[in-house]
Length: 594
Ligand code: BES
Ligand code: ZN
Image 1 (cartoon, helix red, strand yellow):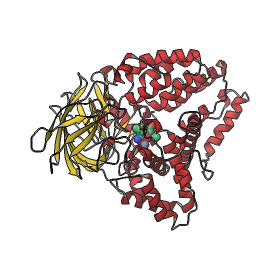
Image 2 (cartoon, rainbow, N blue to C red):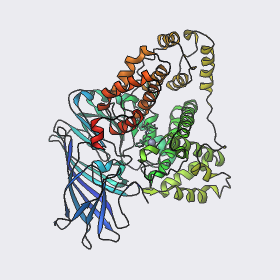
Image 3 (cartoon, helix red, strand yellow):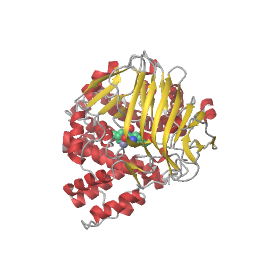
Image 4 (tube, rainbow, N blue to C red):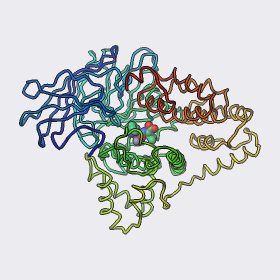
């Protein structure tokens, strides 16, 4: 039972989508036909999810027009119910998207790197695919798809499927995804793209001026795929490419099959932020091969992926690297749970969520990621790596191309691992109770212990230039910045910035952590940079803490409103939904959209 879809698979379920669409970059509109093959299971209709779509007509497989109705509008959109004669197993829905389609971000040339052409990307997870395709939009339902997409001839289209590596002469592109995937993984990007290979199976797409930089930064992609296969079995999706999107992309990355969508903020210039690619690649097993059946089971996607990501980066970059990133993740987890405990949904710190009646996006905190990872580390330590790896390989194989619930996982791991190995552990507490169980293994990092020593010296008055920070990685700087003593004076912030050049950092993680401290310490000299960062970058993970810190004071709040007023048109709906709520923002457009 999926609380976030109107689909009734027990009546009729779509098995294949043939999507024929035109992308109008001027009118900001996608229009065309979604033709479905159906499996009839009983009943005399089929139900699809839609949100903001105009349904022009529905045709049956025999060419006759179908009778259809649209249900009431809710936060899930509207149910499209199509009446089906006995035995009818094909429907074609002709439709176009609305102006506020939440999956889509239409960028003007000014919002791109090249500043010459418009750009479009989609973001489907969790329940946004229904805003650009009428679809059974539940992660428990899987389909194959073909797509025929026309775009202006100067632009190129790519999807979560087999992809072109060159522009077509006439702007028409065909795609095929012949593996069954959940709807949230259907994705499209349109822009003036170039491509560069990073290996035989891997490569990067980006706006032309970004392609070389991106290919250099992501040079390890091929090795990552090899390391992943070595761990948990063959990569089943053909090619693995990454597209670097314009900076308004609301996430770090999105695991669209064959083609990860990624933020340009991972292009640090020193390859230090590529764990994000390891993460999205890992989803090719955890998430895309074995999928959470409902959004309550989201930790099955993300917890396993964080674990897998760490195994890939440990293989490539070693134990110190992993100890650091694991500890940063644990710090995030503690901070998130503390925050949840002061809010309306402290129960969201359980692994299995109860998101009925809520937008699933609101339950997608660091908990499914980092608590999921922490639980898998506990199991790993109890059975030993060789056995845990064998279990995971078997798990991905056994449930390949299926969507499963937390209960299915529980039954499987008990039978395959915990019972035979006599593992004593309170799985139910980990999965269904809030907070962190006592058997958690807290990550330890020798490198961070050294950073802590320097932090202690700094707080006792040692000048910044005398701190031993040479050779510090991005993660050591992040740890340092996160743990600056409370209440730094302007003089101290001046000294830190003059010595370590944080405000000028081209590393988004370091810059974001620094700017957070600038707001906390009211260091207004960096507010020009803060304004610029908030106006150009749309990655929600960076935006939320900065706005949150700003609104803690009256003066900061006024500044937050002013910056947001300018920046908001540059953000994707995923980010504006969260920040509108945080700032209690009400604009005319928001009112009319809701
Ligand atoms: N699948 C997520 C992104 C997502 C989550 C989209 C929830 C919609 C709803 C993706 O794999 C992810 O986790 N991205 C992270 C990066 C990762 C390294 C933790 C991000 O975007 O920050
Ligand atoms: Zn993920």
